[in-house]
Length: 271
Length: 159
Ligand SMILES: Nc1ncnc2c1ncn2[C@@H]1O[C@H](COP(=O)(O)OP(=O)(O)OP(=O)(O)O)[C@@H](O)[C@H]1O
Ligand SMILES: [Mg+2]
Image 1: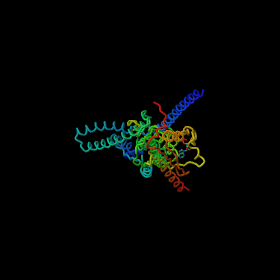
Image 2 (image 1 turned 60 degrees about the vertical axis):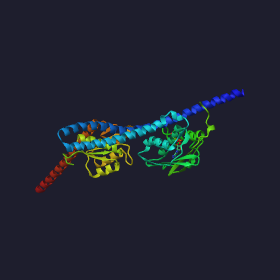
Image 3 (image 1 turned 90 degrees about the vertical axis):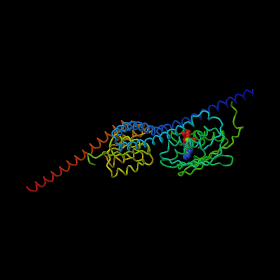
Image 4 (image 1 turned 60 degrees about the horizontal axis):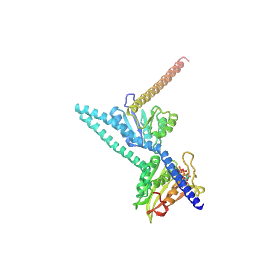
């Protein structure tokens, strides 16, 4: 009997873990889904430019041919200048698109669910490319990234944590403001601090923000799971810590600390 | 604005690349004066003292959004044609714009150059017709008050 009960508990435990993993994945997809509209906007602008430029360059070449045939050199030089400026724009536009796509890729990578040594600055930059689509126009993003030792972690999970906290920071700012991301080596940890100049957290909420389901946002904007999932990933999975300071009306800073070496025994072995 | 002067187009987009692309296209196909602004506040300042036929603006921009820019344009130069050129994300705002600032046309990014030119040309024609109409009305007004003047002087002679 006790043996049976034991295996039943283990079975339930596994089911619970699987269900939780699904929840974490669902929350990630929901956050990405909400970002999608801004990502599309961010990509459509450079695509619009490239398409237009392509057409204009073709027309320009036609004109150029005529002008050269008629030895209208001044006009031809004029057209060449236009074409040069368009080629420069195309380069910037392509870089913009590929940077957003790189940001998306960090969230889609399946091979990233393994423990791996990564430079968290790189994760921050990629996550900012996505989150930035959402608030680039009203929020100034400042980064102060120190050289970091590589951290042994589950990279896609940590990306999700950074995305959750960056999205919260952007949502806390009404109108214009600033988000600052700072990274520092700190003993046997790496610290990532994300500050915003948003509305801050009211004293009566301070005890509750990490509770699953606690949200002050309207339905469709917040599910109240972002911080509880983030805490689970940082504390339970990575043996790190997450805490915050906040001043209502002035802003909030979240500090995330991740140990450089992953404490092995905490991770159940699933091969 | 003189009726035969070159049409003046204002383009507002916080992305320099959009302005460069549209400017190049219009320079190739037309002889319009193109005034591009990445800062919406500067575009508004420009319209405070320069007559404009058509204003094309992006929606999502820092400081002033496209609807706010068009609202200011409507106050400053009601005859100028107002066009919103925007990414897919802000369809809702476009509907709001149509209602609030009497938008002439809503175009989506990525845009078609041919469609953009059609809309701009229609916008120029519309702006110039309205200006001409307004001039005619004020000419009529002037003629009317002239008549009144003559009439009262006539009465003066008889009375
Ligand atoms: N940077 C911040 N500034 C102010 N309040 C914050 C900040 N971050 C979190 N909060 C508060 O904590 C609550 C819980 O945050 P959490 O990320 O867990 O959920 P959520 O953002 O409401 O929804 P979602 O599941 O979409 O993340 C928020 O509703 C908000 O009231
Ligand atoms: Mg959240």
